[in-house]
Image 1: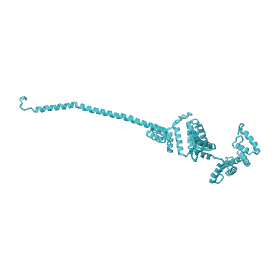
Image 2: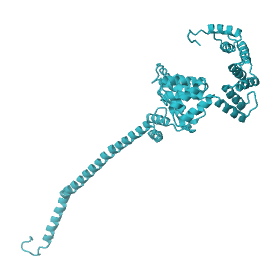
Image 3: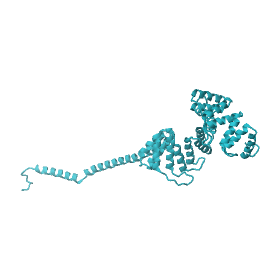
Image 4: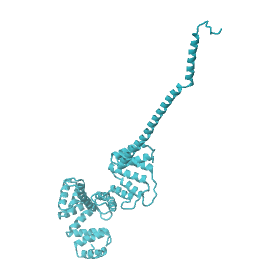
Length: 411
């Protein structure tokens, strides 16, 4: 263990070998561990199994439990799987009070491993294991979820949930590790820590939780806890789509992929000079929108339509997407719609005020010309000719009235 002296596995194996020669059961178990791993001693699973069997025969409960797990799972090409034999070892260890063996018996009854399936017996053994102090990763995980949601009679406590997710993750629970990564990424129940988020997300992926690859991708995309690298982010996003069933999560990953193509290498810390690819951006945004209502996807699609990037420029369609995004609380879309509303009123004012003033001015000008025309018409030569004609007619009528035979009339 390295307590009080410098850690030296080879030296430890040497002393354990001496203790084994004297029949020390615990030393047999520890030396078997080293031989299984090939640390401090030559790797030899066959001899390690023999040492465990000798230790178990001497009554070492932990060795008996280890044998149970060993034969239930086997080691390819080294220790053949023998689940019936493994089950027998687990029963011996459980009868001696080993809580972990009780839990593994419950698992065996649930899956029919080395024994016939029996859900009732599985429940009995699981309860016995918990009463004996064993808490499986699944049990710890369920309690963590309950504290996160505030269900099953426990108060909502994100700090407690984070602690329990960590405990389950340390026990090998992949989903718990993935949840813990998200907690560190967003600062839920713990202080925000991108480095921890990146590390736990990677551990979760190794434990088989492919959804955690989304968190790894986000860290790579934005440079959170690691150097930013859009190409690597895309690889992680594509990887996490494998086996992903939740439509809402899948829609969000599609949006993340679109975001990488939209930004290109503009936020890439390694200077890879990735060019933005708007047609691919449109393709992945459309897939995101088809899978679910991701407000960010609609907002970005609105931007593309407003600029004519990857699609023909169409302000009407842009406003439709911004409207959907704003309806679902997207602040950027709401600001855009608000700005466009102001812009529209300005356009109305700028159009109608000059138009109305122009029409009024035109009416005044026309009115003036009509009035001037009438005035000029009254003083025109045509009017004067008409007046002269009227005067001539008056004179002619006067001549006709003169008496015939008048002395003044010319002969």
